[in-house]
Structures are given as structure tokens and as C-alpha cells.
Image (cartoon, rainbow, N blue to C red; front, side, top):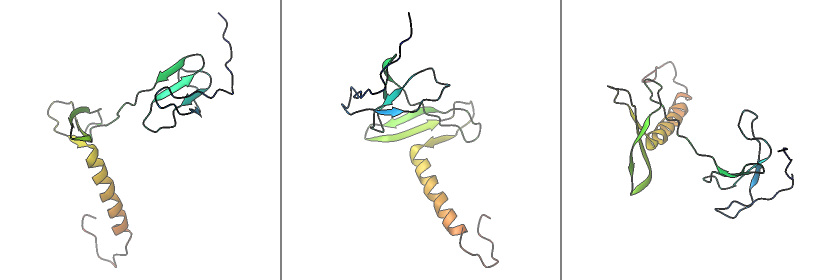
Length: 129
């Protein structure tokens, strides 16, 4: 069977959202050759490629333990608060846990620290410095 090229002027629609898909640059190390299209909705993982057809790329969480660097597992979700995620370290004896809310709080705290530390201290040391 010979490999044939696909058209370059395709305008495929996402089969879930019925929106025109956008052309995506694909890195050569991936297992897909040719032009790849993706749904423009940020939370949609549907793609299209001429030789392959439609396919879904999953989003794999990469949450790591702050102590050991190993990948954490999803331990808890809350049905009433769908965005909540509790991650725990799988190593025996490690009690490390993270939530997606922790990341938001940490990011706000870090921004506040940057603003505070940017102020002149006039020779006085800052707490925690």
C-alpha cells in the first residue's frame, strides 16, 4: 500500500463542538506525520490528521511530590466543587499532599513576596530573609 498525501486546504470541524479546527504545528518526535488540526476550545482534546482521522489526546497530570519528585496520585475530588483536586505522594511514610487550590494560594503569596521584597529596606533585614 502506498502512502498518499492529504489535501492541504482541509477545513475539518470538531465532531464534538462543530467548530472549525485550527492547524497545529507537530513536533517530529511525535508518532503522527502530516498536518494535524485541533479544536479551538481550550478544554477540548480532539484532533484530526488525514492519515489517522480523528483522535483524542489525553491530558496527563504531572503533579510531583515536593519532597521526592515522584508523581503524585489523585486521592480526592469533591462533587460539589468540581475543580477541587487533592494529590498525595505514593511513597510509604510520606505525608505530602497538594491541592490545585494550594497552587493558587502559593502563586498569590509568591507575587506578594516579590512586591514586598522589591521595596527598599533601608538597611533593615526582612523577616525570613
